[in-house]
Image (cartoon, rainbow, N blue to C red; front, side):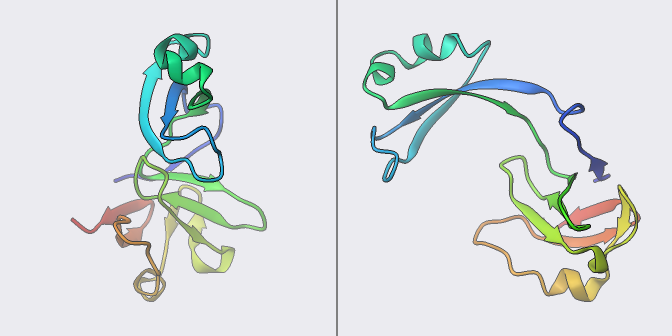
Length: 132
């Protein structure tokens, strides 16, 4: 997949209602996420869970696999899926100009992934290949 340099201006804003299993922010888990037309629709979509404090509305940007986010100090984050899994590279770990970067295979092979996170097979001239 071709990498894309991502900014807040080139990714669409979406609205979601998120439902939790508990009203306690310290222990709650997400049980449902629903796309809605506006933040005002979150309360209606959540119903009684809204009043109970077990739901909220959020405005966010939709990112996708292959997006590159510029971080601080020359670091970049390359998203490997739409759920937000990403790999962060320091400025000395990639060559080229964004988004047409390459990463040496020894660096790719040394990445420590979380369980079930998509893994990068190669990243050459702005083209990322993920393991199937």
